[in-house]
Every structure is written in structure tokens, then in C-alpha cells.
Image (cartoon, rainbow, N blue to C red; front, side, top):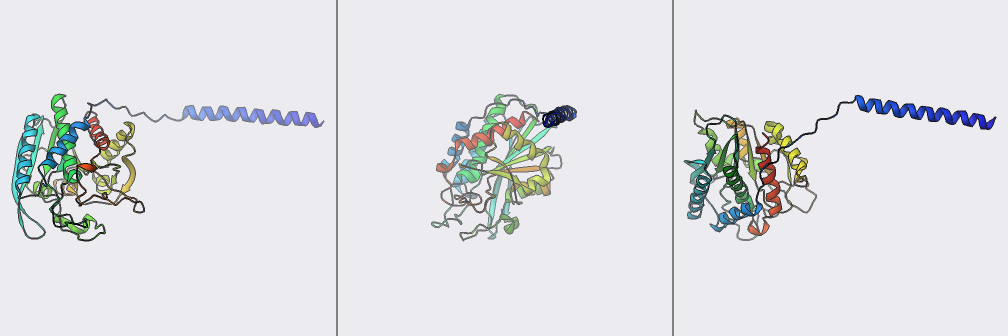
Length: 338
């Protein structure tokens, strides 16, 4: 009798297990499958070429507004865009800095496929910080700005070179904003949120937004690059970008992960940062996201925008080609998937 009861019990257990498996399989079959996002293969981004463009800018010295270095570098940038087939113009103006100093302004603008209504804006600032207010030495001397300034421009120049060689169906506006980094200084070792300094930053993009031509064909969205060349860079999802351009932000971060660059493009959320995209979003009303290095882990050994931020360490030594590749390849591939 004991044996019979055990056999019956085991039979019931096996029967229930089989039914459960079948029901589970049936439920899985009925559950709609998530679509797998397919990406077109973009052109190959050359990090070595982008690095050379960064080195060229640094070779001019600090590109502080109202200096000869600044003028010489600006002339070179205009010629490069023209050589890459971009219809190039300059927006010349004057702005007033935090210290009441009047500064000449030179925004450099390039367009390809200028008649296309489907347009994307790519931008970066090309000027450099006039003082090293986060350094412990020579704090009143300008910095080289290899990462903070030259890296974004270098990546965009390489993209300009490639789209000139490989046909791009959409229209592209590339803007190099001037006088971004002339904000009020903070002479202490603690990081001060750029938001606390309000509108003393990003004077070039503010000027551009306030003086848009009435006939200007606005791009559907924009991407800003800032500090995109440092080793171990991390690019979180910054809040203003999420608010105004969340759709493209999420798509680009997914693409970066798909391409194998998830270690750079983090899913972490960063607080709102005052950068050129702030004014493009709020004033020009062009949805624009910011790809910017920002460490959102305050308990690590890294420091917000990097230990070299606004110091004399921001030179070519800290530029990392794999980082340039991650940003450039992701951005270039996205342009061919819009």
C-alpha cells in the first residue's frame, strides 16, 4: 500500500509539472516579442584623424577670445569646413563678459545639403578658458583646452570630412560656438555647479539664439559635444537633454550600447547643466541634447568633469583615442540611421 500511494503521488506530480511546462510554453508563445532594433552600418570614424584635428587646435595655443591664437585657429576652422564642401559663414558680434569686458565674438557655421528640409544641428565650442581657476598653480593663465573645447571640434571636423566623401541624404548644420568658456571664475578647489553662474557662460550660443535669421530653416534636433576626449570618460543622460530631446537621447544611448560603447554612454541620470544646449533648447527652441563628460558618482576618486577640468592638465596628454572613437562612431552611425 505504501508503494502504491507513492506511485500515485509521483504520477500526480509529474502530470502537474508537464501541464505547467505546457502552460508556460503557451504563455510565452502568446507573449508579443519585442522588436529588435536594426541599425544601418555607418561610415567608419577615424579616431586618428580626429586626434590630429585636436592637436592642430592645441598647436595654436590657448584660443582665448580677442587674442591672435584665437584668430588664427578660427581662420583654420573656416578653411577646413570649406575644404570639406560646407557652405561656410561667420556670425560676427560683440558680447560683454562677467567682468564687463567687451569681447569680439566669432561663431563659425557650416552647412551641407543647405536646401534639405530634413536637417540636424551638430555643435561644439571652440574657445578656451582664459584662466585655470580650478588649478593650484598659474591660476590666472589660460588653459590649452584639449578636452574642453578642442575635442568636440575635432570629432565634428572628422564627421564633416567623412560626410563630404560619403553622401549624406539629410542636411547638416555644424556650428562652432565662440565665448562659451568665459564664465565667472571660481577660485577654490570645490566644484561649483555651472547653473549657479547663470548666463555668464555660453555667450556665443546665446548670441546666436537671439540673432537667428527669420528665414533660418531650423534643424529638427541638435547634438552638442563637450569634453568628449578624456580617458575613462562617462556620458550620462543629462537632465535638460532628457527634458527637451529625450527621444534622440535614448536612441543614441541604445545605439552606443549596440556598437559596444556602453562603458562610455551610461544609463545614469545627471542633473541639469548649463551648456550651449541650454540656450538652444530654451531660446531657439531646437530640441538639443548634450554629450558631455560628467561623473555622477561623487564618492569615487574622479572629480565631476574630470580632474583636469579648468586646469593646465587639460592638454593633449589626457586625450584618449578610444573615447574619440566611441563618440564619433556613435554619432556618425546615428546620422545614417535618421
